[in-house]
Amino acid sequence: MSKLRQEIRKCLSAVEPGAGDSMVGRLAFPADFIGFRGHFPGNPILPGVCLVESALVILEARSPAPLHLKEISSAKFFSPVAPDTKVEIVCRVRPLPDASLRLEATASSGGRKVAALVLMVNRNSTPAGEA
Image (cartoon, rainbow, N blue to C red; front, side, top):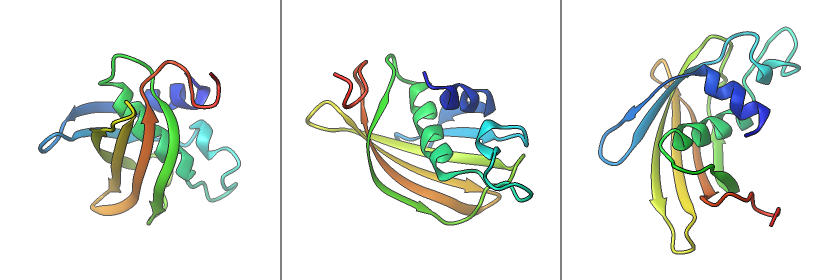
């Protein structure tokens, strides 16, 4: 597991069933979170990649095997996330014919939409391109 995922896992307070087949993860990123370093000094904003990795961490919490990002099909960021902001990420997963997964994730905070993601994820133990 990457250092970033390890740090995100520490920020995760809960993963619970959501409506229908979804799951909901709740996170808060403290001011000393690794992702804020250098992004941006004096006005820290959570990098989008941290939200992508957060969706994977939430999915991994319910997965028997490690997951690996295969592709970012879509990533839209609507609102910045500052330190100590509570973020809720709703994840929906659909299996694909090639044994990978399609992960649709929507992040929100305080009633505002933060991000909408569509990720393709491998369920195997080898990251894409490392076979």
